[in-house]
Image: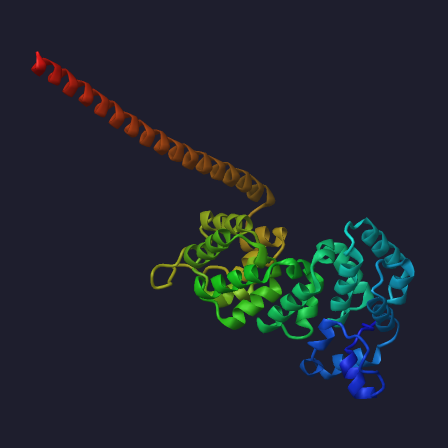
Length: 345
């Protein structure tokens, strides 16, 4: 079932019967069908009925609450409407219904159907709390970053949390990928489309992952993007790489980028299931890999402990040095005072 919400201005131009006094939601004023593929534009124009009338009636009446029937009128099934109604009923605050209505309007205007909208809100109920203007700005930002119609909808449906991330945070990650990691603008857009969760990752952690793969593994940016590196955790990357390295199947390239053996591609290391990696890439047994994982985890813990001990020891030594300085100054002061007393006598 296609989306039933469409821009009133477009309808006014196409059908020339909607009065100018009809209230138009903000997102519809800024919505441009010229940016959409012809098929999507036609689908939106041809699917106007229950959702449009239901949303506009609530906008016009400024209804303080949404009823179960209102969700049914928007095209949700009875089951979906009941779940949405329960979610809204549990929300606190006088503007709760207003926020829900605005969220639904933006999502429908994005071209999502009721089933997708329901799944999206069930996966990310935080969207209920995001203001309409913020949603519009964040969607516009994604378009500016290279999200075209179709990929934008797929990304939002797959990872709706991306619409809850402040624009400043997204901008920081984009800037980091471009300036620190030297990805091209197109590569950054691909990373955001394929691995949208990257916008919530800590920049220090992100930098370490990039440097590990770039310097330790000798993998360039294009290959990182192709194999969707940022979908994988640093632990997974390190574990598989180290296992291959210790089995003599992977070698860090020299300064000229050369190795004495042919390293397996990053895609073959990461984008295969565990069994395939062990048998075909590492040429080992499951028992060997399981033992290795436990030993590696123990090594990492010991390293963390040693680093912690060194740090604490350094702090203690620094404090001891400060205490020694204080003791030395105190003794020196006593010596001077004793010398002065003798001189007075």
